[in-house]
Amino acid sequence: LQVIRYRNFALALHSSLPYIMVIPLGGLAASHDPEVPDVVKHKHAYFWWAQALLLIAAAVLECITRDVFEAFFLLLLACIVIYSVMDKCRNMSMSCLLFLGLISCIQTFFECIILLTSVGGRSSRSVSETRKSGHVTEYTTSIITHSFFDNSEGFRYNLESALMIALPTLMLFNTVLAYYSFMAFPSPLFSDEEDIEPGPVRGRRYGG
Image (cartoon, rainbow, N blue to C red; front, side):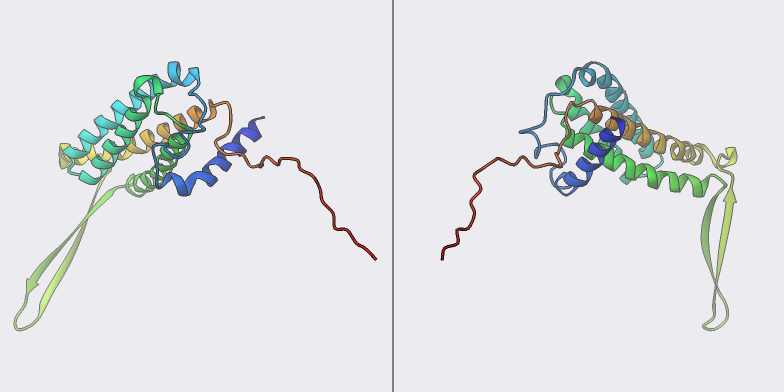
């Protein structure tokens, strides 16, 4: 049974990916999506609201570190979550959950790469120019490496390091939550078997 559930999730993700990129909030499948299960409305919804608050808090912290693009992405993700969960998950559809799970999974991958490349020490590079006699100019590149958390670098530096740990955790939690909410629906989003209506079989008549 668990293998079938994983297969349905993978099939739905593969089949709906081109449409999710165009209509991310579930407009495509709104006509045939089943009703949101009670476990999503009464249990998962609390986790979704908590996730939305954490995303907004992370966006505010990203603004402090002056990472505007990351803050915009987190606010956009929080808006999608709030839109889906509001009014007892009235707008939560299976295609919307696939969209949330997909982008969160991709973001988790890239955030983990950033964390793994920085946890051993964060490096900053600066280039200084020194003009020599005549037309000769000398450029000096300085690379300074600090530990992942360094009190001498101030509050913003350490906040950036803390967010490098918090963001992949948030995205992973978003992916897992989208998966469990998706699996709570009683039927898959897309079926891999077409319904074939029986009809009369006509053969070719041969005459002499």
